[in-house]
Image 1 (cartoon, rainbow, N blue to C red):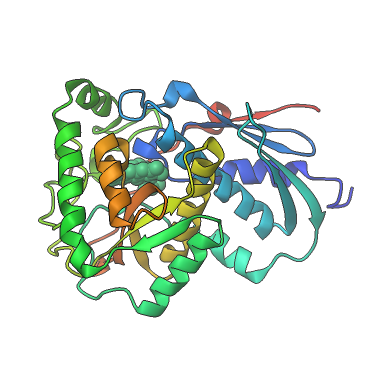
Image 2: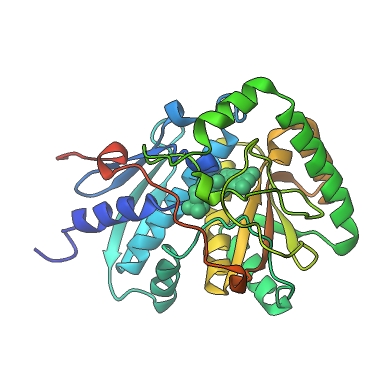
Length: 324
Ligand SMILES: Cc1cc2nc3c(=O)[nH]c(=O)nc-3n(C[C@H](O)[C@H](O)[C@H](O)COP(=O)(O)O)c2cc1C
């Protein structure tokens, strides 16, 4: 059998690679169906944060990140892929079309997939090189979502917005209960954020990190965020497909940052809270709909080892193979 008609191994590998994608509170709200000729991505609303994310926006960003991981795995295996985005379920269908030599850039990016992780320690003192930042903006925009880099004089405005969002979320008891179900402890079920990935105390940054309501065991680092770059992913609207594409762009941005030795920390509370999302819109000059705030910076590995990997659901809980 030639590579042309033997797509199943590549599809299986792509679904498996997608397991390592980032997701809100590590909920992994996706499921893949492997067909002989195509791969379907389904949203799993049982793993949606219904209090924190009632509209499913964070779920869609997470599924978009998984979709980008799968696309990249197929590209690194030499497949050109057409992605259909039907209106209902599934969210997306990947059809490998032609096989050939993989692009070296796809292979290189694919290698970043296992190195990418969320690092909640403070970033180092050296700001990102402007050329690196240009590359990160280009990597995001190639996926059809824009990246607004926050200027120095906007950082205080951003800090105030994030603080308001954090205050709104931490004072919501139902939301705190939901967070506690997903965060802390050892997370032996393969989902959620273990204590080992949460800082032992919130680091003294200008723009606050998410307060998960409990201290972890990760040393937060000595630094501050004075050398961090904050940016907002944004696009034209609030349709399902736009959030999914924004997730793909987030993943492309994150892998590009990883390739440059930089870290990315998503800050989603100002997006989840309605009025702070409106305030964010003002910060980006009313250019469009904000999807996510991210902190970018050089990781100061001298501060200690990178955090342990977050767990993942076993293969049989996220991948199903069917005969036709
Ligand atoms: C849409 C989205 C929103 C996220 N929001 C936050 C956040 O507000 N604060 C945070 O510390 N991590 C946030 N994360 C990071 C996740 O917690 C992380 O991806 C997940 O725990 C898996 O860990 P890993 O990225 O190290 O693989 C977010 C991730 C995604 C995809």
